[in-house]
Length: 285
Image (cartoon, rainbow, N blue to C red; front, side, top):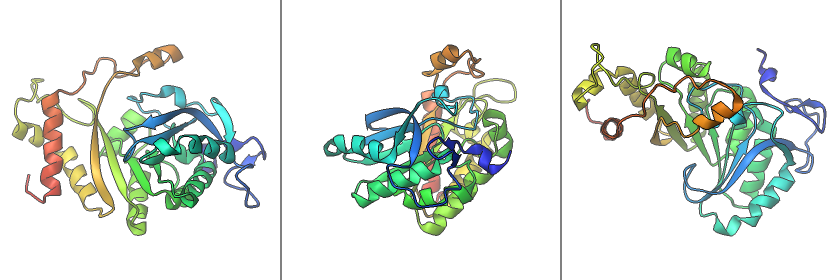
């Protein structure tokens, strides 16, 4: 797939959003939107206006918003119109604006223009991304963000390919770029039993102790240690796998591949959180 194939066409200009011949105004740059959460508390610091863009080229098996994948769906809006709506809620926003998706960096021109407008008006702006888009086309949007929420799908390439259809090479390249810019980053990682974490031993018995859990999850340990090497990373958020979006898969007529996987037990989530604390304090595992 060519890089440009990732990016939707701008219906107002009939040209790729990557190849605009002139600097467009906020009235001339359009994005495709799935939905808005006006007072979100889970996607960055403080209460935030969370904008979910439509379209994602990836196929994460645990996606809880599969209805945001299809390009061409959703509704179209200009940067100027979208920013006007943000201003309606500004007095309630203790945090700022987060652009999520879908994959927001699949619409880099819209994201860049909206974040630059937020910054010019002293509104904190964040991007929630998988980091899987070509960095060359994403650089300006990353520069315009005050915070990057980066979803590392898996800490090894094979698992990432199996659950999302893409490896994490570009994600680590994005982190390298954020490190160079000294751009604040929050890492997000979904805990999927049997996929991103092992919860059973070689005899298919549930792991009963923290030490055994750590021994059977060297990829998780190594991944968090690697993340710790980035000074731009401020925190890691562990997101337990859940099935709250299962009905969306059913509505779309798409089989939910992880239907038979149980959500991670509370004590295993606690072990993972302890692991992060140890590594962040520089303690040996």
